[in-house]
View 1 (cartoon, rainbow, N blue to C red):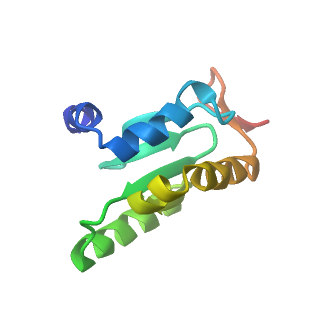
View 2: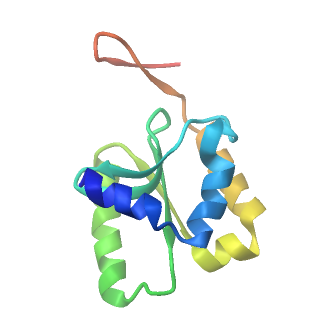
Length: 123
């Protein structure tokens, strides 16, 4: 799975690169990782501290792919993640609006910090 994630990082789409340039280095106030393996899937972007996943969907999303995405989203939500999905066309047309939506969702949740004991605590 980590090899697949590495391959996806190296072959990122232009839209993924646009979003990553704005998420990297905690520019929105949260640390994000890109193409991160989680529960057998590779998330486009994830903030573990905020339990937030950001997914970008291209125009290739057929009905079968949409059903797969829905199952994946439910599994991730059951594991305690919140999932935001954006169409590539929305990112291109309104990157600032997409980033504002992500920032608002980050602000809704207390940060989880990992303690040396392996326990998480809310800040």
